[in-house]
Length: 605
Image (cartoon, rainbow, N blue to C red):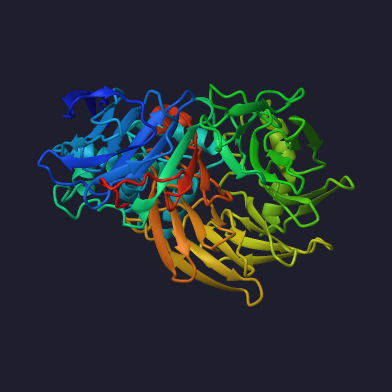
């Protein structure tokens, strides 16, 4: 059996053999074995990933203290590609799966890295970003940097961590501003030197890999984490951006592809995932949708830009069409769309549905919150109070600026830029009250669902993003640029903060969180560290679950009745993701969704 050891910078560059006895063609639906170093030492916490199908699916398990793994629930009689990965060792990849016995025994041997640059390339993006943050002494500039420069993607591979000439940095910053992530002029001028010096390999690699040949470097995940099984489903292609996903009442999973204006549907109960896609009608909208569309990536076909989605009481799917400035409803039985024009506001963003089946949604660019009642056809567009008279004038002039931008170069910016307050996350309290966040304004707000009266509250942390209520009526809020989650009591108006334990501390960017409806555990997107993070309220303990694919930028989390924790990998652009393809991800915490292998040989997970 041929195995390829992957250099992260030069894939498939070294060829070695994995020793197995009496190889035969793989036909098993379950495998087990051991992962060892070339010195016959068990490798703890290695990720063993089997890929199969077209479009592909990947299933990943972790090795135990003895280096053992077991994996079940695979389709039999199919071709597999296997990857074994552990930071500090060469990736092993083979597409010639052989088994030592018909019961699926399969062992692997990994080689230690000796080149620190190759080890540094294996580290998640937050490690590299920490080098940049360490060079920023101003808290104001540091907060800007985190909030704006990781708005919708990581710097998770070598193509994004390059030293550039000053003029190239100016192009990057201009595009970034036009796509909604802007820095002030004084700080923008510092960016070329800041990033070029931080990512200089001569200094970056030694800092990132100090002690990489010692046992304490990149420690393995805990025993609890190593019980988990992770499924990843290819969804879309290199031009896709799988922005948000949701689990339907029947366990079917839906995802919106913002870049190609499609709704995807996946049935995890089917062996092949039964993936389908449905084109969302765009009418006569131009490329880029409402307003100027000059900043679109070259491979996008976005005209309506589906963004957020939720399931109604009847099982239909509601979707915000951000650049189309509309709402869409997908009838899951008829497989047809109904498009609802909005009476005002710019860029409908995140939506939630209340107990009366009314659709509430933030309107990010124009500083509104909207409500639509499908039963009556009633629309409400509620203006959120501005922080100042100047901001109020700017927001009211936005439609004029957008119109003029179609004909005149206004110098970039716009969208969800740094100067806009940006209503972002939204959720419904148990008492029916509507709560939302303002990302750039560092505020949350409450709307009375009957009178539409608004109350605003400053947050004692920066960049509140997507938030959720737990079963006790406490509002949990992620601080995107402040490396924490905060519990807010809507009665006492008190905040309680919990710092995220991602190393290096202060480098995480929690985009969103969600609450497990069964356990009340808080699940947080490890958006910059290729992870999902669980916070158990009863014990106040965090557990970090690493995800197998490098450059996994997560935006929302949902749960299936079988215990699955679902999210999507929606780094924008998708080509930066390892393999260049976005995925839907299911984390099975206890490894029990697919029947586990019960075998006396090597089974101790």
